[in-house]
Image 1 (cartoon, rainbow, N blue to C red):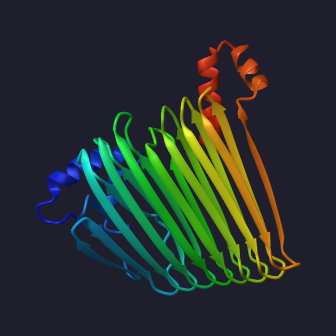
Image 2: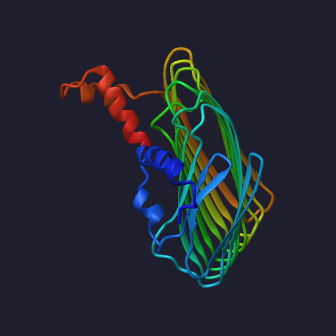
Length: 318
């Protein structure tokens, strides 16, 4: 439900939400869990049986506490709408997700800054996932082409025995600005994770991505993948880490960076650390220009070089 006296601001943020790819009708449905945050205000929220939503607001700080009871399995996605409509300012968010045993939950977050000239957005999410649960979290960002957004996003997750956690971050439709993304996941016995980041940097954008898998439990397993397009004068630093501690744990990290510009500065750093002889870790990385063979094939079909380049980039980031 939309809070009293917030309908006008909801109208503005809903337009930005739709532009970022969100479906506003999902935010208003009474059978869907949702929360709408604009700046340091909560415009609306909705919950269902088995899910508890609490919030705290102080100055520019918003904290949301999400609790799912044991056995809660939702067929419909949980929608998080986050935005900042001002040109200048700061937004600080903290999420606390407490997810019980035998749960199945899918989160979809859209974060948008349509008018930003100089905005700082800081977000920290702490997830505690019980045993035998399945949780996915997709975070889609939509900034703008002219202003500066400084983004500092952190996800920390502890994944319980036999549980699965899938986390994906995507910012490909607009400029990045200055961005730091951290995903740090600890896996207990037989727990699994898949981490993925897809970003496109252009002009003088700067980005740093750090994905960390901690294979603590016996037979835990994880995959971390990063896909980065760096154009013009952009800077990108990608660090993928995996730590093998549990018996028979398996981890794989992978980074693909495509360079499109003579002034880019791109680096990828894989870090594998095995502290148990029964653990196995692997990595794969590639940094370079767009494959000339792919370009030639597409251009032979009538596309210009720019059109062919854009099509290949879209294929990587889809």
